[in-house]
Image 1 (cartoon, helix red, strand yellow):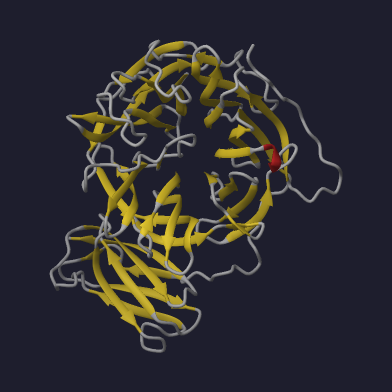
Image 2 (cartoon, helix red, strand yellow; image 1 turned 120 degrees about the horizontal axis):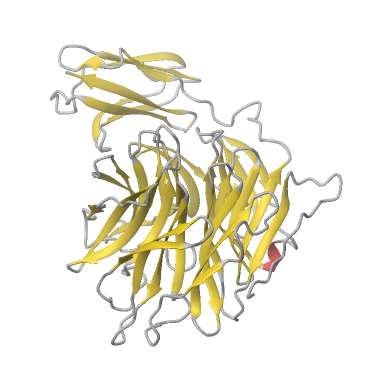
Length: 516
């Protein structure tokens, strides 16, 4: 057995200040000097089994796809030893250190869906072949869809690969996101798998601007959490980056509707430069939360947590934990509506509500301390105070289970008040009627009120100076007659209003329906 396992319940001394205690951890070195990694973890429907996927080092076959199932209560194997598989053709291993890689795992029905890639190198060209693999819960092989593409020139960014997997809220469906090349052009493919194992044809998305994803977002050791879904069955995903000489790198994300159509949005920081998304989470109503490194005026290139509504930025928070800027982090959204961010190298833990208010700062208890070389690439929570983190420790695959002794409570005085905002009637008749946009401000402040359509395009903008009507402390009202900036009537549909102030004393987002 090529498995170095550290397993057990570690108790802290009474009076310890940390409230997030380590219950058990698994360390799997794979049996060779090269590195191993746990890239993705997912809980089953009852929260009793934790499924993991990654890569395992082996002296003979270099990297192998590694998958495991663990009992959440103890960390003991749920169905036996880890599963290791090597699909690379002998003589075509390529760079060797990343031949086999499992990037995503999703339980559905009585099955598991794994996504990943293996090396296929011909004529001094480097490339990976992606795959979506179905297993039984106990690891037994059921079938594989291989994602073939041309062997590409030496480049991490343009390899065919299986990127991510996610389960529906009822665990009867699983989605797989992959990046493929057809006719020399990159395409993202989202495929759905039913509980029976049947696969949908898949929906392709061609990036709309430029030659495609200039940065697929998962080089080298840390595939991001790319997929999430809402209660309406729409799927949201990170879609790499887009590059322009004027703006640098923007990160892209999109929404796949039930018909497979994709609406893509991009985010460009206020300071033109590099913007790269690391993780995505979605709440049941379709609000999208993204953890990203962005370039912003005044504060530079930092890791930030952001909320988007229909592709429109609702708020953005710089991440600072233990008085230090967060460089790399993992993101989890609990069913209780709390966003958790874990510093990848220190375990420092931040909790936010869905409005971006900081609820709590704590730390995951890392055995031996961060100096042992931890890297937390993925974080999940059961919503009941238990956390599961995955990544590496000193070059070995690592998974840790943690328990919070007390749930976070909102601070008595939020750092930033919310501007109460709503529109009525809602929906309203866009042909003959008007809607009143009602909002309340804690003090006089310059106000910008912007209406966006479902694609994220600006439709109408109002600006008010502090003290004027529309920018006074207390109640303010603005009427909208359903026209755009060019005075043409807008079409029927859902629109989003965003209220912002200068300085940023409060903000709000409202939805407004227009009917004909």
